[in-house]
Length: 224
Image (cartoon, rainbow, N blue to C red; front, side, top):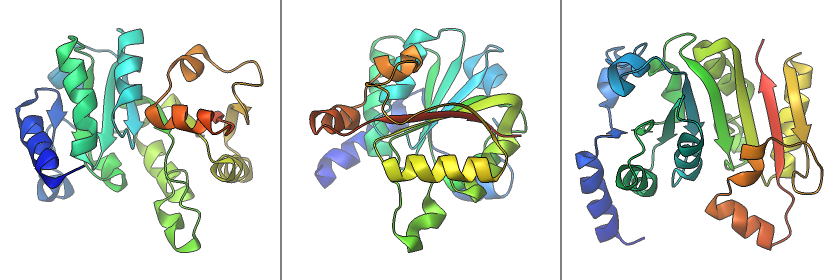
């Protein structure tokens, strides 16, 4: 994407009512105003909050919101030029239960209060295979602790990925930590039993992986 296109999208994001781009210093100082009141103050309802972390173009956020009008969905990514597409689509088709938050996922527990989130989706994240990059792996123990701080007691996390490495790593970590794995499938389009929204919603990347014959994996788990 050219720099002119990026700048144009950044400017458009500033005009979108469904895009939140907070000041980092304000957040670190604990002054983010929506923390603990997303449903009431932003969505103007009391519906559960669902996050998509590393949302990319926001395809899962938008599609989940269309399928579940009784929940509020927030796509989270640091790359605003990417989620511009999802934010624009949501506005164009009148989806009022989807929003996009531009921030680093490392700060996620500064944006949401304890028990404020009911579900987290992690769709096709970078598996961060190199040892020096493991601290950025979105299912490592440190990130799981962050998610635990904001999830409700019955809250669940969904991991959908083309990386068999990340699938195996995450399953092993969850079992080692004594966490509750609700469902795991190493090839959702070959083995039966995956939830409908896992099969029905396909991102651009997923379609590419499927065309290459890659298996798509899925885990649903709860943190104790």
